[in-house]
Image (tube, rainbow, N blue to C red; front, top):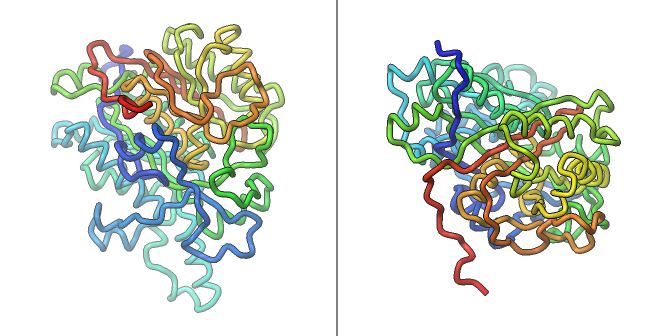
Length: 426
C-alpha cells in the first residue's frame, strides 16, 4: 500500500437527469438553458401542495441491465448503475482481476430506495408479509446501488453508501479522493443517486415546507432571485470514475480534469436550517481551497448549491463573500438546480460533472429565473450561458442536518478542450 499523497483525476462521467440521460445531452441542455421541470406525471399529485418536479419519465432500465436486475432494484439504484456504466465507458476502463482489489465504489444517497420501501410497507399492511417483494432485504438499503455497481464491474475494494442529505454525492466523491490519495485504491467509481420524486419522499419534504408552490414549471426554481419560495424536487444520478494520476497515465486514459480539493464540515445548528452566518459552510470552502493549494483568486467559477430556498441562497451568497472577499464580485456563480431541480443525493455529483464540463468547454451554465437577484453585486450568470475561461472551479453542496461538502477541480495540463455548444450562436 502506498501512503504518499497522490494526485487524483477524473477519467469518466455519467449522468441520468431530468434534462438528459447522458453527459452529452445533460451538458447540451445546461448550455442552452433548458429546464427539465414539469408537472409530475408518474402518479397522482392532486393532494400535494407542490405538483412540479425534475422527474425522470423516459428511463428504461432494461437498456442498461437485465430484467431480473431491474426488478429487484429501486429506481435510485437503477439510475446509479446506468450512470456508472456510462462513466466507465467514457473512461475506457475494464476492471481486471489484478485491478479488482484496488477498485472501490462509493455512492451517496439522501433518501435511498423510498419507492421500494413504501410499496413494501403498503403490501405488508394490506395483504401481509407474503405479499411483500422478496427483494426488500437486499434492495431496501441505501447501499444497494453501490453494491450493484460493484458486482456489475467486479470491484473488490471498499464499497458502500454515504448518507449526508443533499451533500451525499459530493461527500462520496470527496471520500473517494481520499481513498486514492492515501493509497487505499487506484480507482474509485463514485457519485450520488436519488429518486425522491415519489409519493413518500415528496410528501415528507412538502410537509417540511421546503418546496416551491408555484404553478408555472419554467419559473418554479429560481435560485438567488428575490421571488424564490422553495426548491423543486429532482431525481437522477451522477457518477465519476476517479483514478490516481499515475494509474490513468499508465493506461493511456483521457484525463478530463483533476479533483484537487475537498472540504467537509457540519453546522451543529438545526435539523433543516443552515447556520445563519454559514460558518461551517465557509470553513468547508476554505478547507477545499487549502486542500487544493489554491487561493480564492485562483477560482474562476463557483457551481453553487443554490437551492432556491430563502435561507440557503442568502446564506450561501454571504458565505461566498466572506471566503472570496473582493474576488467574489468578479467570479461567475450559477446554480444548475434552476434547470434540474434539486436532485438531493445526486446533486453534488451531477454538479461536479457540470463543473468539469465548464472547465473543458470554457462555458459557464446559467442560472434560470434569476430576474431580480437578492445580492445585486454578485454575478449569478442569469438566463444565458456565458463563455468564460475556467482553469479551476469550486462546487458547493450543503444539506439538511448541517452537512457541508465542497469540491475543487482544475484543468489537467495538456487536456484538449471540447467543442463549445454555443459556438456559432448569436
